[in-house]
Length: 190
Image (cartoon, rainbow, N blue to C red; front, side):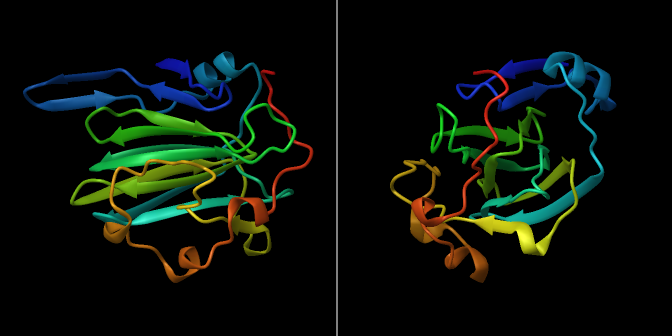
């Protein structure tokens, strides 16, 4: 497994080795020991989630506040998505900045989105199956989000806004400046 820090060093691209032939392929999608060796600390994933979405569906930008904040390890099983992580840690040098990575069933890349980041993805293929691990359970009371199209974030979602499909909840999200942010969680690498 290969690990690469992005322009925001806490967000990490994980690339597993895939072995294939005319029969199909084999890929080891997660190795706790390798990830923890790279990170330098332990991570305890407690739940796996999966969603299926059609072209143009945007889920996000979402996060949970402490004490139920979550680290996510996200990947695409089938299809293609643009995956985005936004730094919401007020003390961070990259506060308000984002990383976007194309994840596909073919490239098998994964994105580690740590606590203190909002996360969202947009389906670029006819449909996509998205899977992720989290290190904390969902809490409706701590669930938050902000508008995907906030111009202060300058996110290029790769689709015209009229082709993007949102849930009723995501249609009513506040602007980034009005959303709750992490006050005391800073980067592990600054």
